[in-house]
Length: 231
Ligand SMILES: [Zn+2]
Image 1: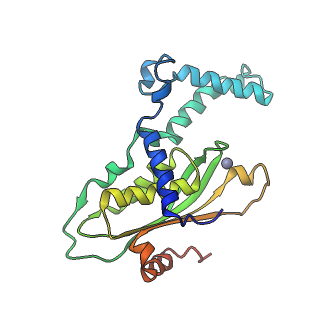
Image 2: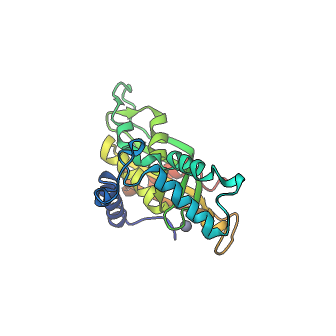
Image 3: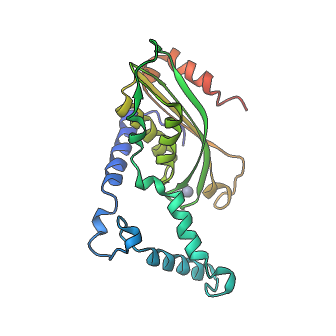
């Protein structure tokens, strides 16, 4: 799969996923009791730990042997970190903007934003870098906020195309810039450690909106800044 160049499709994906995140877990809420430490979750921490024990058994292990006793606890704790994106709305990071930019209206690019995500098909890590650029209209955000937006979407179960589109649309919808570009270069462990076992393969996706999409010079400038071909 290559770059996502179809805005209608990406928009569709982003919308679908966006609404899923907003009422996350709503459909199963009534049926499963919740514990105090996971008020917004449809299952308790204990149930999640039990699921890890089941997977250990399935893999051929004895979950009661000493080395594995605390593993379910550790895995669930790791999950709270890897998937904390479900607890945040990345757009919040972009709501605090600065207007005093002395008329600056050229491109702003943050490149090499390292991220870790997990593919929604195998729950395997996706490790990569995102490059984000935009041309402001009248306001800009603190540059670290763009990295927080990347993390907010990356720390969920993802498909790279969807991650790329979500970041771009979030910036477009919240900042209302003249244009946005997002390029993601990532490797998928579901491909490197299983299946076809191909190491050193990375996938590049891009989402260009507004002037980045319409004006080849703007897009060219962004891609030069980002230098995805510099390796
Ligand atoms: Zn996968």
